[in-house]
Image: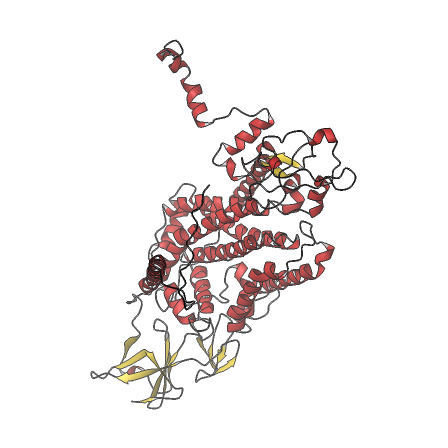
Length: 164
Length: 452
């Protein structure tokens, strides 16, 4: 078989590579193909990351403050928060275990997780088990109609209560 | 001209025979040439070499583990496609469809059993296959890349099984996937985003069910099929199954009489080459070194690595794929199918209560092959769930590029490989022990309990 010999790259007097037409076209082709591949991968990633979710909204009303009498701990299981009220102070503590996302239940000493045995105190501090960090506290606000609104998108520092 | 052409009547009489011969080009072979032609004129048979080394067929060398993995994958594909006819990936319907398999679908429970047990079996057998390849030193050059493909296939098998776990939408499914995807969220940098994309939401729900379904029935099987094809192709291109060097040396140093050296090459006397013969004799004169010892090796046009082509009257350590290899394969297939059928008759796949998002079972356990992982996770979520598994996989992938000494290949537990085999044995034992602890010794709140 006769192979056509590839032309040597043209070198000018100064010893630098000259940009031949073939080389230029090669670069452009490679750039175009590689760029298209990158854009394809990127747009596919954008595609599979949902913009809207169909689950529960992260900001929701939990009713009037009167439904949580002083000294009570009410776990809203569907919402995965526990509403704690001490006197006129009120807070929403997450009941999603920070370990692997199981639902913690209210125990005598605070919270306990059934999956891997993590235990938390009344404020959500870890007292045992593999949980790496304390339970999250969520922002609670009073809406204009007097109802309490929990926003699970904004975590606040532990011990920040809403005075009602 | 016209006298040679068959009449219409003759054509009709010969029709069945002609149709048969147009499909199968060769009659059942009675000669070596026929056996070779049977192999390479058939699309399915030509995937295998015309001849294979005797060592390949030793049952105690491979235990047929790779082949069993393939057949389990075939069983999974067939039973899975059948189950797809009745399954709906919807949180409101999926569980009901599971119940319908019991009452309203002929062989519904049986097919689900087959699918479930074959899936569990495949995870186990693929792992055992990996152990076989390691303990026989079969990942060494030139088979490094095929080992890498194999490790990827093992991970894909686990992931396929994991995605299938969610589909029945019972308590076991929901909480195993909640725990499993939370482990993924511990990965540095992209962990949270990865979990969100995998679930399509912040928690396991309808989006997650749909996504896992698509991954389980289309995406992952597609990747597995492509990698399996590469895996098999590489076996041939890397010189067939691994075997001890002595097997080939003995072949080459066989004394040959002067008269025999002049005998022309047989038409197809190679293992792993296909129909590219007869160019070798022209390459070099036969170098005779020592007293009547012949050391010859011919590459087949550079297509296949290693000394394969045997010229002249050299003793042949190969057997024909048709019928020897094919018989063994058929036997393994029948055994695999029989065992799955038997197990499916006597044991039903578990189905727990329908999903209750509020009440995780206590303890919430992942599938058994992830319980070693879950046990490690109970000590440290990051190290147990992400750190150590990642290190293990990276080491597995790099093994053939680190351990490249050509000793002990093709022998179980070779003395020369004591260190490597001990290390791998330790890795296997630790993981199995963790798995056993997670499965049998962990009770409510993941506290230590005794199974007795």
